[in-house]
Amino acid sequence: MRSTGKLHLGNYVGALDNWVRMQDQYECFFFVADWHALTTDYADTSKLKQNSIDVLLDWLAAGLDPERCVMFIQSHVPAHAELHLLLSMITPLGWLERVPTYKEQRENIQEKDLGTYGFLGYPVLQSADILIYKGDFVPVGEDQVAHVELTREIARRFNLFYGKRNQIFPEPQALLTPAAKLPGTDGRKMSKSYGNTIMLTDPEQVVRQKLKTMVTDPARVRRTDPGNPDVCPVGDLHKVFSDRPTILKVDEGCRSAGIGCIECKGWAADALVSILNPMQERRKKYEDNPRLAWDILEAGSSRASKVAGATMDEVRDAMGMSLDYKLDH
Ligand code: SF4
Image (cartoon, rainbow, N blue to C red; front, side, top):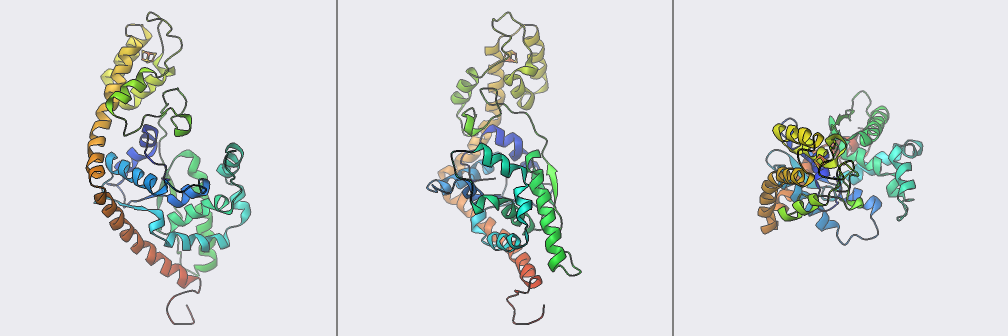
C-alpha cells in the first residue's frame, strides 16, 4: 500500500480487511510503499515519513498483527532497489508502455508531470517487490491484475536468461480481492481525491455528521416517497457493514416508506461506529507510544531483509555477480 497517509473505509473494505484474514492463511509480507508514492509525488516529500507511519498505524488498528505477518517500509529494505535495477535491464520498453494504468494515469493526471523514468518503471519496481520474496500470491484488485501478469512475464524472462535449469523466480498468481462497492458520502467511489471519505480515524460525531449529509436515493424527496436501497449509497453501506436483520429492516422500510432516511442513516452510523471504535482504541495505544510502532517496523524490515538478502544472493550468483571469490558460477 502506498504511503497515502491515514486510510479510509474504502481502503479497509477493498484491501485491509482481506489482509487481516490472510495473515492466518499465508506467510504474509505487507509493506508501505514509500518509493511507489514517489513515482507520482516526487516534488514534495515533506510528509512522506508521516504518511508512511499513518498507514502503518491504521494497519495495526485494523488488526494486522506483527506476530502473524511481516510489516515494513519499502525503503528500509534497499534490496528491492537492487532487484528493480537488475529487472529493468531485461524489461522491454513496450511491455511497460502497454500497461493499461500507465496510459490511463498519464492522460488523467494533468497536474503532475508523469513523463518520468520512475513512473514508467514502477511496474518493474512492483515486480521486484513481489519476486524478491518469491511470492506465490499477490492480493490485488481487478485494476492491478495486469501488473501481476507483467511480473510473471519478467520472472519468465529472468529464468530463461539466467536460470539455467533452475527456476529462480516462481511465477506469482493474482489473488483477486472481491470488490465490495463502497461509495463515499457523495455517492461516487470513496476516494481522497473526491473529498468524500469516512476515515478509519474519524471520531463518532464526525462519522454521524458525514452520514447525515450523505446522498440518498433521489426518489425519496418526501418522507412518504418510497425508495430503493439498491440505488442508495447508504443502502450500500448497510450491505457491507450492517447485520442481516438491519439490512432487511432497511430494505422493507425504504421500499414502503415506512422509515425515514434520517433513521436509516443513524443505523448505518451505528454499524460504522461499532467497527471503528475498537480500531481507534488499538490505534491510540501506538499513538501514545510511537516508539512501539517504530519497533514493529524495525523488526519487520529485519525479517524482510533476511528473505530478500537470500534471494539477492541467488540472483547475483545466477547473473555472474556473486560476492564470493570464484570465477565460475
Ligand atoms: S431509507 Fe435508507 S436506503 Fe432508503 S433512500 Fe433513505 S437512506 Fe437510502
